[in-house]
Image (cartoon, rainbow, N blue to C red; front, top):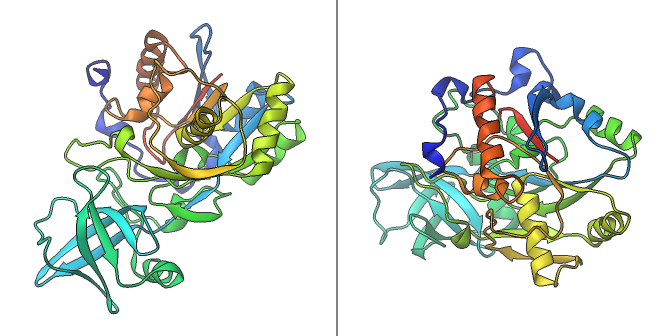
Length: 338
C-alpha cells in the first residue's frame, strides 16, 4: 500500500556519514511536520531547539550498536551471519542472508567459537543459534571478529563508531538507533540550557531488514527494553505539568507505549520484551512528538508514524522530502513530528 505512494531513488540512499563531507552530525536536513495542521517546513537539525519549548522532555535510546555481522564457515562454505537479537546468555536469533547452509552442522566462527542451529527464530527467515561461549567472552569475541551490519546502499566499510549515537552506552543493538545519530553533545547542551530535559531508556534494536524485499513483522519481532525509574518519573512529571514528551526514535515510542499498555496507561520502571505493533489505529498514551529518520515505504516504522500524522499529511510530506533531496537511512536526514 505505502509502496505505491512513493519510491526512493537510489541517489537519495545516504551511503556515508555527513561528517565525511566536512559537516557536523547536526547539520543534516530536518523536515518538521505539524500533527494538527499537516503543515510542513524544512530546516537543519541543529535548529531543533527553535521548535521545542521549555519543559519539553526528550526521551533517547542509549542502546549501543554491536558489531553483529560475523563470518561463519561450514566445510568449505563461508557466509555472513547477522545477529538479530539475544535470546539467552548463549542463544541468538540470526539471519544467514542469501546462502546455502546445512542446519545439521555447526557453524565455525574461528578462535574455537562455534554455534549449533537449534531451531527457527522468532519468524522466518531467522534461525536460532546456540553458541559455545556466553556472556563477556561472547561480547569480547564479536568485538574482535565482528563488523557492523552493512546494507547494499552503504558502499564503504565504515568503522563501528560511525554507527553509534554520541550517547550510546549499553551495548546490545544490532543496528544503530539511528534517530539519535544527528545529536551532538553541543546540541544536547544547548537543549538543556533552554530548559528541555533529556532522559534515557534502552531498547536493543533488532534487524530492520531481512533482504530480498523482506521486512520484519513487528508482531513477531521481539526487542528487549529497559525503562529506568528516573525516566519514568520524569515522564510522569512532564505529563502532569502539561509538557510534551518527545521520543527520539521509533524504538523509544515502542518501549514507552508498551510499558503504558501494560500498566493501564501509567508509567513505572520496567524491563521486558516487546512485540507491540503501532499503526494508525493505535492510540498513543505517552508520546506527543517524535524525532525520527525517513523510512522506506515497506517498513513497519512508517506504519508507526501514521499513529502521529494522517496518511494524507504524512505521504504529502514524504513526497515533499523527495522533491527537496532528503537523504534516507541511518546516515540520512531527519523528521520532527510535533
